Amino acid sequence: MKRFYKLVSTAAKDGGYVIELDGKPVRTPGGRLLLAPAQSLATLIAAEWTAQVDNILPDTMPLTQLLVTALDRVEQGRADIQATALGYLDTDLVCYRAADPEELVKRETAARDPWLRWFEKHYNCKLNTTTGLVALRHDDLAHVQAADAVRALDLWAFNVLQSVTASTGSLVLALAFVVGPAQEDDLLRALYVEEDHKSEIYNEEFYGRAPHQEKAMAAVARDLKAGREFLEALGLKKS
Image (cartoon, rainbow, N blue to C red):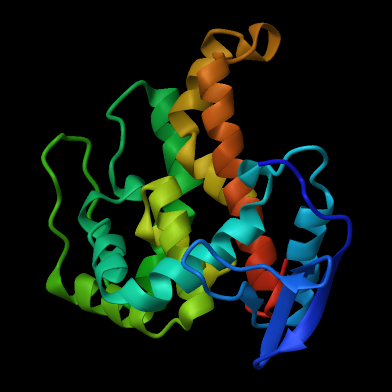
């Protein structure tokens, strides 16, 4: 879509802050006002709209996309989205490990064990790990604790959690990111252990990664950064 506006601004409305284009409020695809719950978040989203040049490129507006998702999908369909997020626990990325080579095993341990241990300590339950292909089934207590933790999140924190869970394939990492101390670099390190190991073997620092892989990794990094900024703007996370 061509950029059709000149001025981007924000305005207080209905207990939140709308983004306005030439004085007219932006609406979501579902017809709702693009209403941010805090001025700080509205300002960041307005900056995304301001940064558009000739065409409006949604992929360059991750905070806008997060807010739209919260308003159009998550607020109305949280129960189903919550069930999907909780379904990741038994197939969680941090619980599936390589059996060899030794260097990769060490890398996985260093990148993923801190967040596995954080989850176990924070929620007082044990998670299993495996080097096999058969899906795990964690203890019922782990599922109960994870469900309680997810249900306790407000709309905005849960919105980021469901996005991060889908991006990383890990509910553990998503919880550590949303309610714990994990930052996006921690998640990227845990997510791309195997890729980074192969990168060194094939000297990808010199030759570069495959274009499709670079694009996919850049998209995840962008979404995690947006998730952090979204939470920080609402006072839900410290950098």
